[in-house]
Image (cartoon, rainbow, N blue to C red; front, side, top):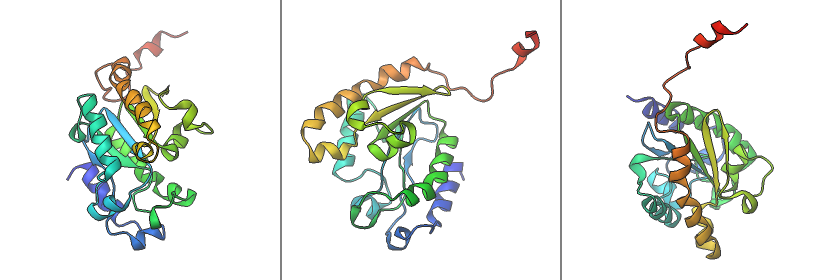
Length: 200
């Protein structure tokens, strides 16, 4: 069994939050275990809760079209959410729920080791761009530890506010060039330390 499959089993047994009691299915995430790009949304909705898969409702269909616009599909990226269970009545995730799910997301990132993390919406954005406003920083990046973090509106935003659709589509088109900037080869472990011997 792959590390991600093992992790998914552990996530399925998590009942730290009240919302775990009312879920139909846990939604850990899906995609390539060696994906270069990881998309992190906010929380599962009704469709996701029914199927146990992320982004399968109308917002997910838009995300699929966005991926196609840069010649990608779900099998080549990894898609997850900040929390793994659907909040009651699709409300926003609570800080305690985000905190309880954080170790699951941390472990997913550790296994996949993406070269780029795309935050979809303000809850995943807040993790990497604390204190920032999505309307001001969407389409911008920050780089840390050789990973590019890229902020985007959540695809669902375009469904509620048609004017954001163009911004989301434009931001998505920036991804291939940004990814090319971090090189094409994943580092496979700690870098050699021989150079330290020459330090005085």
